[in-house]
Image (tube, rainbow, N blue to C red; front, side, top):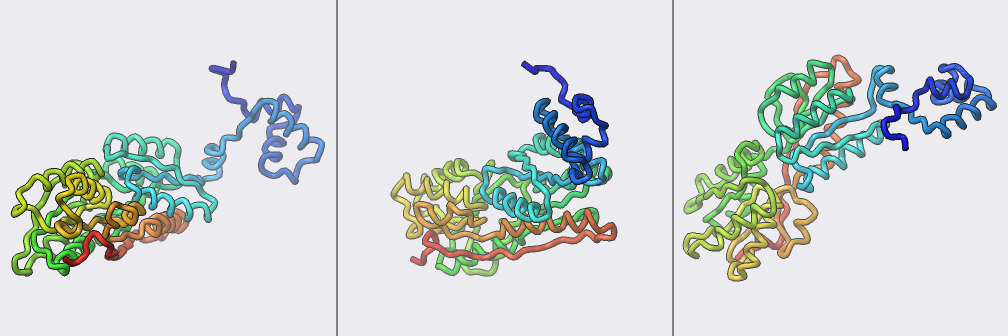
Length: 340
């Protein structure tokens, strides 16, 4: 067993192959500069000893890393996985790799990933922040690691950022519900510490203002999950019929799917006949729900690709100016908001 045995170094390879360290380095990086006999000998020793090159150290010595760190709020939400896929595709074209860190809606875990990426001296960090606290992010930047804020409107000139206009998205969602004749609208989402939730609710409020008989009631969830959607859906289903909303805007599709399940389990609540329902993000599951779900689409993969492009601009251009890229949401209508 090799438990506790230090890793094989390039010096070990050179000693066993009876060549210089420079020769081993050339075999690894510039094999055309080494004779076939020596190249074969060094390669054989590498295989026998199980030597693994330290790419992190090599990249740092060259003054650059080919690794990008990505920290998302919650990888259980397919929206963030789509962002990661977009980022990976863009990074691959640049010969880079993305390491994904799932904060799981935990600021402490987010901090652990930021510390890890700092220790690894990654090329840069893409992050969907948990809160307005920027202390750890500021530390990364002060140590020469650029940071791109994803799904966030940066309030500082220190960072590039990109996000969808969630206020507009909230307005689109509720205006659509109002257009189907609904007037008692419920907004389901939380926690309020997430700016996405606050912005979507703000847009919803703007939509009902000035519409005769229209109202907006809030139902706070502890998280944007299917289980929380189901819990609040059961609360709504237990309300007397004359107090129930006739439409619900869920802060994301996972919550909307949970609501849909709760309504289906009770069976006495039909979607959209009794309650119209719209979500947010337009994840793949929206189309395959019990009732295909209307939603507000965000261009998740484009967001991921653009984040990597912003990072590359900042990394390669010393005169790069920080900027914010805003994307517009899109209404996608399906069966869950059908007219009465």
